[in-house]
Length: 370
Image 1 (tube, rainbow, N blue to C red):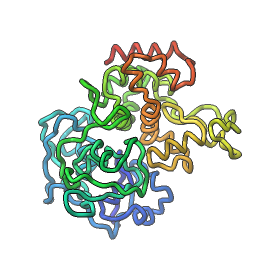
Image 2 (cartoon, rainbow, N blue to C red):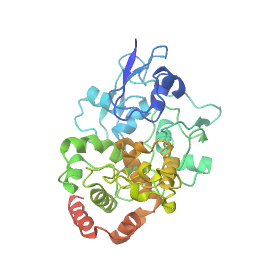
Image 3 (tube, rainbow, N blue to C red):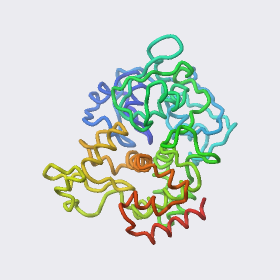
Image 4 (tube, rainbow, N blue to C red):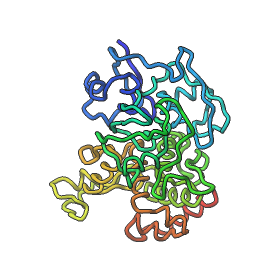
């Protein structure tokens, strides 16, 4: 029996493309009822599917030269491999520390490049699958988020849905063949803020949240950095405000689920809790606590995940941090961060100024870090 062990960052959609099959077939072969829920270390049966190949051809893999703006997770997705496989092949201890000009070996055991988009001429089309993001699709086809938005009339780059047909602009390269890295998407446009770059290090994260263990910081960091990139949280000011709010809201990332039962939210029509049991079912989850059926529905639609049907996913790191980034973007909080208005950022997250002294203390610490 041929099996594959799920790695950090894998999605069933990406694995289906890697093994030249469909999400439905892969889910059926492994008795997976929720295609959005797989976990690191899970053994998946891949018998009968095409074995993955290196993106560069040949059994020994290929190489790639890091460009400014690249991330290891982005390169892994572009070549159909995993961050851990790239780390192992290149002796990289810190997946967040790569540099422009660095030569990376693409493992020969990595996934095959995704199939070419349908259609001829200068472009093609792509059907959105579960777990896709516009930035991920842009990276896969060697185009940019802004180009995809323009070609498809998409106003909100964080809002695409499963089954949506996207036109791939003619300027993009075929998937699996990297070109210049796509710019980061976000509420203020596709380009990163001047002088900024997405992502933080373990040391910076623990500098803001000193009670967060190094092991937990390393576990969360890839998901946190992905969310910050998607939300265009790129400048020191934006990073400081975002992490200060997360630190207070989640007790320095100790609590991904509200301690209370959620019964206090029962019958709260303002939260969309209209069915018996909604209070408990849609209790607060994530580093910026998502609460209420209506909010779970909105976040799920924006991220392409069925959070209304599976609210427990909101506490899983791969989803929880993306929800926090979505919330930040949907409330236009980068603009208030750029203006230095920490008080308004707090009001838009909290609905008031609860815990203001704690939030400000974290903010001062974050300002020292960045």
